[in-house]
Image (cartoon, rainbow, N blue to C red; front, side, top):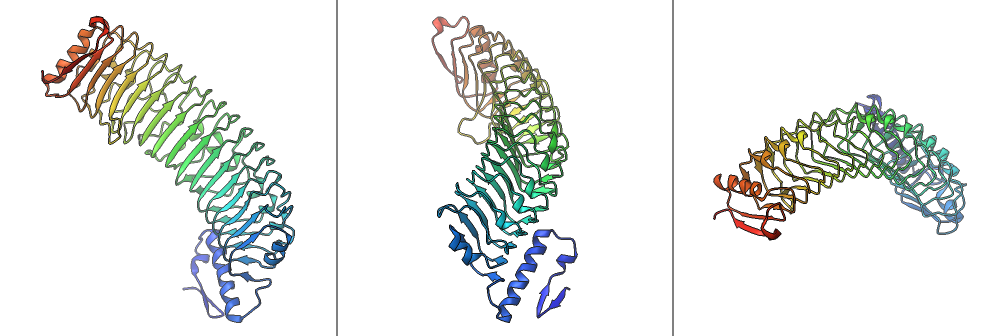
Length: 461
């Protein structure tokens, strides 16, 4: 069972290796209850309500307790400059929030805080240069959120944190150069690094193995790689976008969770390779968009299916789809468009089905690929569960690579491919009609089309 101390049972979880956050919370709760029965004074003990600190008078009211059972909110409404007088505080059972305090210069008054059972939020505190006040903090039961701390250069004050029950969000910190101090963490609910323009290193996450939610790295313009994340084995979602200096994502190579909810790689102007995603066998949405130096899709060679959409859009240097050559089924839409250097679709050679899911625009779209000459990469494609649109590909000369296509559940649109003989478009329409397709074909703007006029043809005719 457990230990009996002054009529209270302290659970054996403390002696079974549970995390620090539960151990400290149980201790604090025990002493709160003991104080209640003994009738002790609140001074120096437990404050059984939330506390808001706006000025020095509020500190005098709240600073005599070592435990607050509700929330602790600290704001700058009263011109607060420091937190001197809060040194006795060790435990907050609710959320601890320091926000909107432009005049706050020091948070050293919280130097003895050990546990926060809810969220720890540090937001809009532009004069705070260090979080050394949190060196005794061992756990946060909720999320750790650090936003708009514009003088902060590193996060070293969190070196003793061994448990975070929610996510870590570090966003909008203009001077932050390095994420460090979280080396005691092995798992976390999620990681979001966003709009930290000076950040170059994320070494503080080197011990994390499991992210139960998502990994988001967005608008960190000096970050060059994700190598410090090399020990992560599990993640549910990956979003990497708008990182101007990021050249590679090999730091994700140890991941073993082969089916993330989505993978979004977008607007990374220096990214040259997707090496690091080799572990992926299936995912939800796959979006590869506007990565101007990406030449192929090497790194996705083990991907066989997606439960969501596949968008390969506006990657200026992408010349081939090599690397995605194992994909067989897409249960959402497929869009391959505006890739100025794309020559062929050979990477799609095993694709059998594009189901088009339940989205409003149920379609497969091949559009705006300036150097694409043929669709031979779709030689195994049998079914499209929505409309099929082939349009605005200026030198596309053949579409007979679709000779295995038996069914589309929507319209056939072949438009404005000025090098494509209209006869090929008609042949594809006839091929589908012979197999029972009963919908409309829109064929216009293709080579040898009569004056470029729109030809609408009911397949039943």
